[in-house]
Image (cartoon, rainbow, N blue to C red; front, side, top):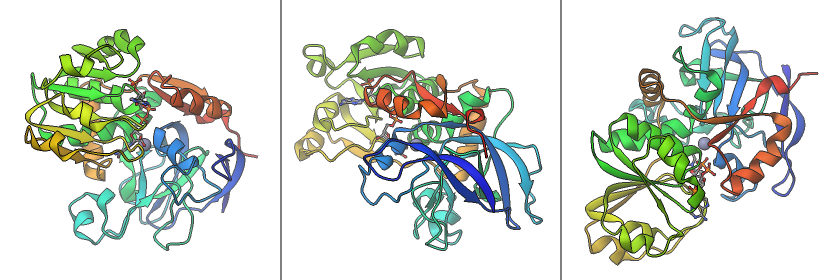
Length: 349
Ligand code: NAP
Ligand code: ZN
C-alpha cells in the first residue's frame, strides 16, 4: 500500500480538510498515476454536501484528473512510464453488459464505478477521487492527453468537457445551428467553446447579467440575462436546441418556451426536482432529454477534438488549501470558469 495525502470531508456539514488514504500498488492491468491537476466540478459539491443522497464518508472528491504514469502492472500494454493521462468520472464498470460493449460505460447496467463516493467492483472497497497526490486505475479507464494544450486547462475536459461534447455531438450540432447554453459555469463555458468549435451560433442564457462580456469573449454570438424584464417573452421560440447546465433549481417550463417547434432541451445540470407542465412540451412538440458524461471512447474523441480545435477550459488554478473558499465562490456562480487544484500544493508525509 502507498500512503497518499488527500483532502476529505467526513460529513456533509464539515469543510474539506487534510486526510490520508492508501493507494495500492498497481495490479497486473493497473497503472499508478501521480496527479498533477484536478478540476473542481459542481458534482463534487453536490456529493460532499449529500445533495443527491447516499454519500459515503470520509469522501475524497475529484474526478477531473490529469497526471503522469509512474508505475504499471506487468500486463499493461496501453501505457508506459511517463505518459500524461487523464481520469474522469468513473474508474471501472462491468466490462460485459450491452452498455459496456457499446463503449457507453457510464450507463453500465450493473453500475459504473465512480472515481469517488462509490465502490470498486468488489462492491465494498471505497473509491477516493482526485483531491489526492496519486491514484491507481485499470488501464482501460485511462485517457491519453494529447500534446499541445496546457495540462491545467485540460483537466476540466475530463468531466465538464465530455459532458457537453457528448450531447452536442450526438445531436449533430453543425455550422450556423442556432443554439443556447444555459448557465455560464464550468460546463456552460465548455459548452460555448465546444459548440462554437462545431460551428454553431451560441447564445448564453444566464442569471448573472455581469457575465455578458465574458460570454462574448468566450465566443458566444449573443447573451440573454434572465433578470432582464420580459427576457423569456422577448426570446420566445428562438432556439432549436438548448443545453441546460444549471446546478440550482430553476423553472424548466420557462426555458422550454424559448424553443422553436420540434426543439430539444438537453439537461446536463442536476439540480433539485422541479414541476414540469406537460403543455410546456406538448404545445410545440418539444423534446426534453438528459445526458450523463460520456464513455471512454467518446472521451478520447473529445480530447482529440479539443486538441485539434485548440479548445481548453478557462481556469483559476488554486492550491488545495483554498478548496473550501472555491466551493463558496462556485455556489455564488463566481467561477471563471473552472477552479483547478495544483496538486503540487499537497505533500505526502
Ligand atoms: P457551475 O460551475 O457551478 O455552473 C453552474 C451555473 O449554473 C452557474 O455558473 C450559473 O451560471 C448557473 N446557476 C447557478 N444557480 C442558478 C440559479 N439559481 N438559476 C439559474 N442559473 C443558475 O457548475 P458545473 O460544474 O458547471 O455543473 C453544473 C451542473 O451539472 C451541476 O448540477 C453538476 O452536478 C452537473 N453535472 C452533470 C454532469 C452530467 O454528466 N450530466 C456532469 C458534470 C456536472 P450563470 O451565472 O451564468 O447563471
Ligand atoms: Zn463533474
